[in-house]
Amino acid sequence: MRLFEMLVTRRCLRPIFHGIAVLSCALIGDPAATAAESRELGKIKVKQLNETSGIAASRQNPYIYWMHNDGDSGKVFAVRASGKLAAAIDSPVAVVDLEDIAIGPGPTQGVDYLYLGDIGDNNSSRRAIQIVRFPEPNLSADAADELAAKSVERIRLEYPDGPHDSETLLVDPVTGNVLVVTKEPSRARMYEAPAAELKDGATIKLRPAGTLGFAEVSAGAISPDGKWVLLRQEADGWLWPRGTSQSIAEATAGRSIAVPVRGDRQGPNGEAVAFSADGTFYVTVSEGKKQAICEFPLPAAARN
Image (cartoon, rainbow, N blue to C red; front, top):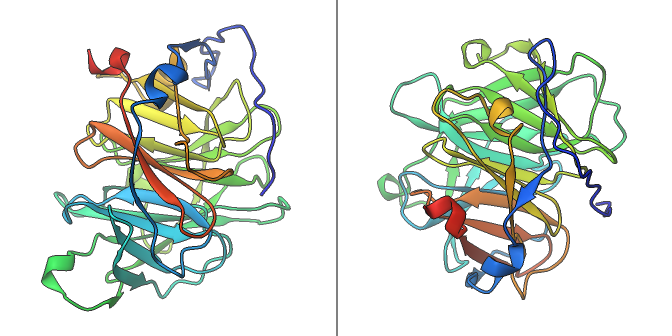
C-alpha cells in the first residue's frame, strides 16, 4: 500500500452549508503521553493472516478479535487476544478488495452483525463497492474450526461523484448507519448510507457527509456506546468525543485528541484499529506476518 506524509492544516474548519460538514483537524493532547502505556497482547499466530487490514472486537465471544486480510478473500478469522486462532469464517459472497471490518446493529434488534467492507479501489475504477453483512457467530455454540457465515446479505454502494479508494468502514451503534471514509492524497471524504436502506440485494447511493482536514485515512472505529470516534493513518490517530444528539459527521467536525496507533514492536503500514468490547481501550494491528496486537488505553482527556 502507499505511504504518505500526513497533511495537516492549522485551521479548524467548521460545518458548512447543505448539511455537509468539513471535519476539523485541530488536535489536543500529546500522542507520546499515552504511547508508553500501550502493551502487547500477543503476536498473531495465524499463518493465513499475513496482511491484516481490518479488526473488530467480538461482542459475544470474550477476548476474541475478528480479523481479515487485505484483498480478494472474504474469509474472516476469530483471533484470541493471545494471537492464537479460535475459528475461521467463510462467506459465500465474492469480494474484490476487502479493506475493513466493523461490528454493529442490523435488521434484527439485539443482534450484533459483522460488516465486511469490500471498499478498496486503488485504481478508482469500480462502479460500485459493497458490504457483506451477517450475524456475529457465537463460537461457544459451535466447536468447529471452520464455520460458514449464516444469513449473509450483500449490499452495493455507489458514490454520488464517481469512484474512490477507501480503507475505512464505520457502523454507527446508535443509528445503524454505515459510513465510508475514503483514502485520498489530500482531504479524505466521508459518505453515509442510512440503516433503513441497508437491505440484502439493495444498491444504495451514498450521501456526502463531510471532508477531513487530513489525508490517507487507513482505518477507523466507533466505540460500542457511540460516544467516541477514532480514525488513523499509518502512524497517527485522532479521537473525537460525540455528543448525545450529534451525528458522526458533526462529532468529527469538532476538535480531536491526538492518540498513538503504533506500539514499539508493530510494523509499518497500520490499517486496522478497533475499540474493545467494553470501550475502555482500543487495539491496533499492522500488516505483515506475526504482527503484534497492541492495546492502548483511552487518553486521560477521554477518561474524565
